[in-house]
Length: 217
Image: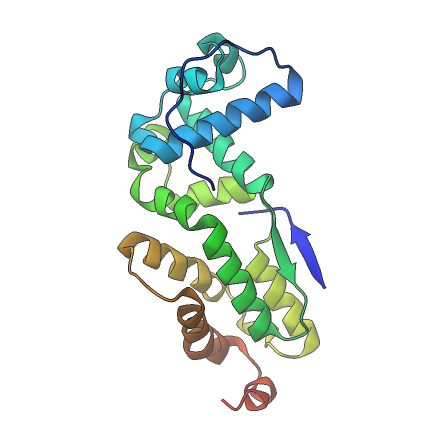
């Protein structure tokens, strides 16, 4: 059984001039945000302009400016739209090790380029908006609990994890791991790497002794 969790890519070629198409409401906004995301992928934030998004979306700059007051606001909205329209599935396998591995591998496969951009191509945004990668991530989550927190708290109710050990720093380990491999761009086998992090770092910190024994640890 798998459930969706509304949280947090496909590359598009450079736009070609074309006749503007008339769209309204949600359809127009979705098209603008898809165009903004494609522009971010193409050139990062340093090359991101409202004019470039307008060209790709086949619309005009005022149409975009009426919805987002700055390129920073548009970029953040594009990140949110990308995540919300591509929800991850939350595994329900009654085993926290399997659930964490499945989720983090899927997260990596969906969001590697997103995380890579956050850590390597958004410095100009952070300076303009007086922000940071951590604050940016909080804005993307919008106050929602992370999926890792959800999985660990559910595991605690099953007796696999000690709830007293679920500190913010411990639950940030999977995210820090993804940030590390994104920043270093190290060539790795993702499933084996995730298993190593879960088995040698995360579970020894939070799992109950009974659960660890059941895994032969």
